[in-house]
Image (tube, rainbow, N blue to C red; front, side):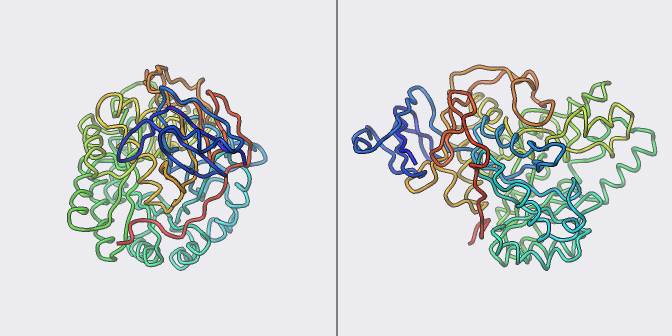
Amino acid sequence: MAHLLIRGGTVVTAAASHQADVLVRDGSVAAVGADLGALAADAAVEVVDATGLLVLPGAVDVHTHTRVATEAEPDRFFQDSVAAAYGGTTTFLAFNNPGTGSSPAAERSLLAGLKEWRAATERDSAIDYAVSLAISGRMDDPVGELAKIVDEGVATAKAFMVFDFRLDDRRLFDAMRMLGSRGGMLQVHCEDPVLIDTAVADALARGNTAPRFHASSRSTEAEAVATHRAVAFARAADVPVHLVHLSSRAALEQVRAAKASGVRAHAETCPHYLALTAARYETPDVETAARYVISPPLRSAGDQDAMWSGLADGSLDLVATDHVPDRLSVEKAEASRGVPFDRISNGAPGIETLLSIVYAEGVGKGRLTVERMVDLLATSPARLFGLERKGAIEVGRDADIVLFDPAARRTLTAGSLHHTSDYTPYEGFSITGAVRSVFVRGRPVIRNGAYVGTRGDGRFVGRTTAGDSG
């Protein structure tokens, strides 16, 4: 593998920023410091000029619902991995998405689902990737299989408190305790089923079936009640827990209280909760409103402010996309046919816009320092999800590096993005900053804004630990 010297940029870590060179040898960071040209003089080295650019560790997106390739759509997983690279993400975690084309065996068994997913994604990614298994209440013995998945290099799994495949409280607690006892960590979708199922049924009974009623049927109270229960389980089991896609001030207060009492509770929010509000549902155009049918839904401006506050003060640990590559022409087409909101596919695309939104809305608007952004997008997700070689530009780590132009100005449009969805929730956003080049383990994947990688160069990353071990 050729060596690489990135010269003259501003290297950003979670602790500080400083002008430095970065020397890469055999896929790893070999040195970081001033004027490293002499160290590379005895080898065949490609020199990359990063003058005026930020040199960032590649983003680590720990929450995506990328779709695997099928005979009809052979490029879905690969293309979304390319889109991630265009956006400055060098490692992503995907769920195996039971119920979206998986076999009957995978619907009933975590291990069968893992085997199927690994086979479907082998040598199909442009960047490095891992998997978190989605636990379904319809499975035969998911709790009993959790210890075995850690042995297979999968240290995280996700359980849902809502939807028809949810885990009941007893099994959710058992799953959290079992996975934590093996050094892993359960991710939990926190919404209370009693409150939400009742609100949905009441809305439908009143004839309130349009997409905008999706938001009013999923209250912040339902999120807060479920968050409280999840952290109570983690406290009782004395294991870490990761609370996915936090969206409201009420739920954040539960996380803050848990952390203050010593519970190993970690939480993420998503770019859509940082950049969009529930005002997006206030349109008579059902197709437009369907773009934002996600769970939890978009919230108020006050909730959005709370998410930014939580990111700045450490109450929230990271930002992840919850990327779902739904298409208005396929998965969300039911909306234009008058299908009730509870049957519209949940989710929105975001795998390519993670760094763009957090930089523009956070650093660009003075809500976050660039160092805190690096912590939220790279260092903390890598640490909490067992990706020991990822997340920082440090000697010995994988050379996953993004060259980012903070002075660039651009407008986000669906046509300018590369993901497999046919829209973006950020259509028309004017943003600051742009990714120029991306390297994964020292190999160029994006160079001067163009894809130059190779399908299958991305490696599966096995993980045997996750969460804090203390």
